[in-house]
Length: 226
Image 1 (cartoon, rainbow, N blue to C red):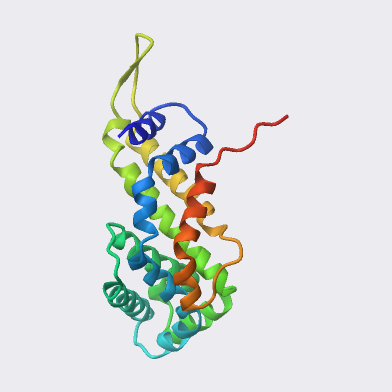
Image 2: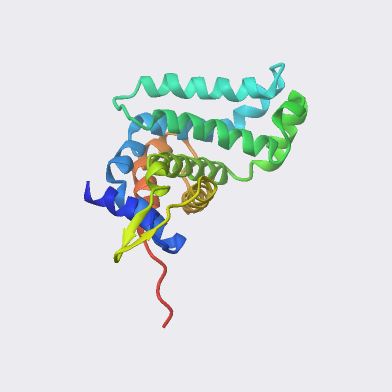
């Protein structure tokens, strides 16, 4: 596909991160559709519902991670009941777990927290419902960036010829560092969702538009200084 070829070429070129991010979102039309699917919206709904339900869930279990995995299981079941199906379901589940774990533990390992401590930290760190949803969207786009960049890791390390000169490929450390930077860019794009829906019905109704808006912002390049 020409757009994926353009993204692969950009990864092997010395381009600014903003340009790579634009190529990433330009190439991913099929991923935009996959992420906007109603089956993925079920995970976004679970994140919004977890704003209120997760503290009680955390207090009711022996280990905090159990409550978060139960929330992910609820999202999977709700997703299976929708009319949609998506190749992005594994990304959505990982994004939900990561977003809720990060909101709960931050820079502290979740395994070091008691259920009560985890519930209190989540209540203190969750922000507003829209911020929690934004954290999920950011993590979802970060997962997308990591997934599609990983496919190009081998090619990024290959020597290429430019204007008759052999140019060494990236080292493994360099390619991993670039992948992390691109994932962080995608995460930042996802968190800027503006006025977020805060009910299950509103999330489902607006989910495709939220994903479309995020991809549009991801494709945009910074304006050149005048």
